Image (cartoon, rainbow, N blue to C red; front, side):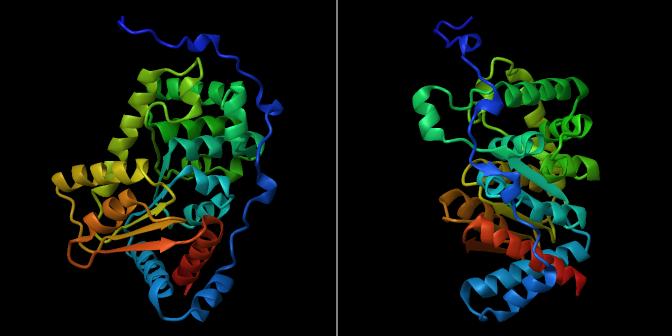
Length: 315
């Protein structure tokens, strides 16, 4: 027993998801951009600066796909909240994205969209009332699934994807983790304990959470063992995924992975320190490797990028 006093999470006042106002609805989600439209936009841009960089990233991702190399998409929570999951799902279904890595927030929003068709609350207002994140349905589902996942020897993304597909909620087709599980594509979820609202749900099992997320780290490192000629794209994770990526890449490199020809890109609204050094700069010192930073709103950049990649692989 700890010598220090702990908060009693069993005394939390937890409400129903249906009674919580949310800001994002599936009806507002993006529709995948027609490849020919994306190609026309890309062709209209000048051959300068970020426009040139965007073209190069698109070309290098398409080339990685053609050569059968891994294409990893890492996503933060905001990417799911702004409704661009359908664009990434199209890349999963076309076999372009071969590994999906999410932080805990992205997985939580993805699961709420699949089960309820809406997600994202007013954090500031609900923090003041003590109701932020205090909903039964999300915590019950995610924590029951991760406990079962630990029992089965699954990773965190794997168990949440499987549980969604078994439940068959009304919007499973808009879920990244459910789509990945259906397609047999690795979807890994990398959490820091205490960063997600389901961690303070009374049903959260810290041992099961740690076991399944650590397994996902090892699965991620196994994917990066094929880093030579691969592409790793970070969409909107400022801290957790850049840190996890660097450590998983260190494991892969120690076990013999080559980094020649690796492509990395950070897509975000603001360029932060960790994505810049951990994703764009440090991993791309080998021959033929390149790192890119592309700044812009996810709700614009992701549909354009996804459509442009589809145009390139079809040409």
